[in-house]
Image (cartoon, rainbow, N blue to C red; front, side):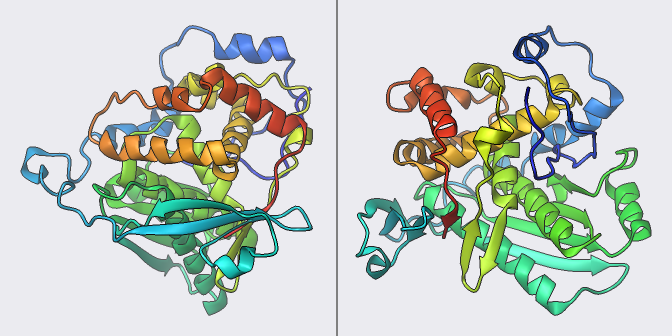
Length: 357
């Protein structure tokens, strides 16, 4: 039986749907994901509303054909050191002195010069300066981490307009203005306006939701349409970020416990339809698997190289509505089946670690 995750999982518009506390048997999981697609319900259409908007991405029209091609290019290569300390925590740094006492893995990354802008405002009241500074630092750190994986040229500028609503009434006005009929939620994003809107209920919830929705905006601006597993997996992965001064820490969930009794199936995950993603019975399972897969790719040597290939492909095909993104996973050393087996081994043998950047 699959156990519910300790953290909250959001769908793309952060609709609050009940998680499956009891879980599904393996046969139920696979058969439900493999069902023939049915007509979309109104709720499912709302969850996909960003897809239609992304078809008119800024910079994808004929009049902007040279906009992305003329974007800033790399200013050179950066050396990134990766190591695991005595406490089992994984570190990423461009400072060689910090890694000298460990057997650090060295990777060359092109230092991509792409423009990123964050605009933060509130409605319905003000927020403590400390909170605003913390969430601002966290989102900017996410952008810095993205930069290590992005290609050296052709990357569009990205803007995130984050609006925090102090109370339910203020948040409801945002919903009515930008996403009427969306239903119960505590956060959403509208790619057309680079907007991430969050209902502030408490510091921890607002921080997590702000990162989650901001990552969706960042993905939409940089990559256009992306597979659901990638979009939600990246948003969930970075939602765990905690700032410690100028450094950031990403704690790792206990994936062996969370995914206990689950038959991890990479093909089923990357081919899941919107109906499956919005199904209360398997929704949390898809989110957990996507999160763990992204963490695996972001924390292992072969995974990081595959992630670089994936992001380069997403940038290159951002204006194409039917880009074959999942095929890039087949370029993982040994192929997609090897990726699945390595991912499963990583989960089963508790190879996941907290990460510091």
